[in-house]
Length: 380
Image (tube, helix red, strand yellow):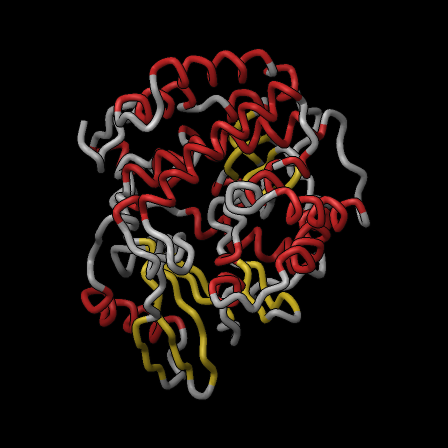
């Protein structure tokens, strides 16, 4: 097994790559998609798509004067800045061989978030049909603000204060309680304009590829065989915590680089393309994938201004932190993040890929310890 391949639970065939419903069989898209790590390890240059995208935009907006330039994003999508007459917009392209159509879902999620009164980009157009061009695209508001990670790296962000605001926002978007669990079915969005998770049971979603992820990390020697076995045993012991009666909206990729704004406040929560229906503690645990106890304590304070913490919130927090760190470790190994410098968005100023690797393994161990001991979240 090489460093850029994670074996699929189901072999990737040409039919798999052409199916619009493969999200049903993925826990997390970046590593579980049939074309694993597409968009993280190397892809088509933006210039090869630019002319086709401009034609598609011109067809959609035939009366507009359109110009297009690369957006130089570091996320899963190829990005562009489009100017339509005098209005500037942000355009994302999904060019993977699976013909994924989740941009339709994300557009519906963004509508839901904005309807709740939360700051998020407005969607001006989306096309995942691939009838005119061999890729899906989405046009959004261009939010004129950097991401909060920009200020954090410069030491200009009061992160505990900002975490309080983020925690309140998490509680706010949890007012959305979709049917089902896990990723949302694009067919339900297009046919009924509703968000509905693929899975009838949250536990079924949570354990998708769980053993495979652990096996991969063990094979890649990030975890020992004993460590992987201990993690699996402890998670299975706390399986009853996954018996949810109702899911809530979960961003599922919550991090400072997916929040735009200034040190004074948040302008927009972005990149909802991994959103699911899931557990109330999941997004809070995602913050803990990067930040420590004092930050999480403030996030919980902000959360409780709007919603009470759920029952068994500590163990549910640690359980989801452990699951999320396992996934992030798979991505970081498979996409070669541990070999990058601090110019990469995930790596702090003055740090290295090796320090990210050390942090990753330590955070997995901390989550396991917290789950075993039902420790306070602030002890992180």
